[in-house]
Image 1: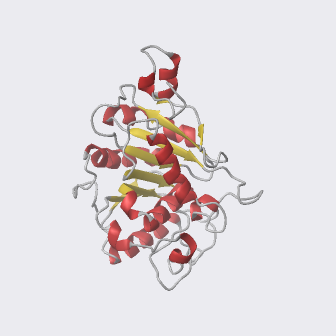
Image 2 (image 1 turned 45 degrees about the vertical axis):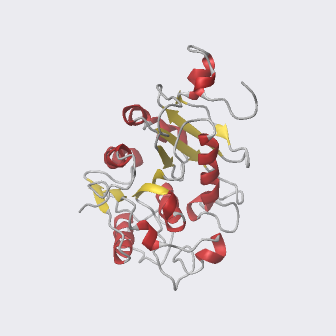
Length: 288
């Protein structure tokens, strides 16, 4: 064992405490290139360096930043589907003392939340046997904002995408500036918004059927009375107009509750993760 690379679970003899730290629920790891940001993982107990790299599932927190609780909600999923789950943490207060939204917008004027996530995936790949050229991405509320904007800029990095109940949305609109459109994406981020490349990615939109309150929503181009369900449907319609197929799962009897919609998310991701090529055009890619 040397410091040439991070230690992996198989670097330790059976029963060594290091194995327990690097499988199951891991500690929070600082991102080496910017330790203000960190990530934790759920790694199957049977994880080995043998065979093809395991799928990577990224689950992104909302404004409350419950990243470890979100990771824990995928513990059984990781074991059952032999995949690694990574939960990033984008702390509040990075772009100023009252900043809670920067990561959702990918923070074009400050830190780059999209490239930070890509760096986290690469650092994880140095320690665990995972595939990072394309991974599965889910986010809800603030995480749903991050997830669909990340997909606009990095569609080629996604094996599947699950977008849950974003309070503000960025449609493909070449006439309107970011984040209400995609006119200046190239100038801000160095990437063109590329709807055509999303057409091969399985996409889920997911929300509680009762997620219709508007009191806490930030103003945007949407009508003041437009609730999250209406905004999600409008985003899906915009993507459909650009040839992007998707499924919409509305969870009955549920409001704005991330953990209540996770069964629908896990069902979608299970179909996509179990298709190790990540390109299956089946139930995981289209829906009602």
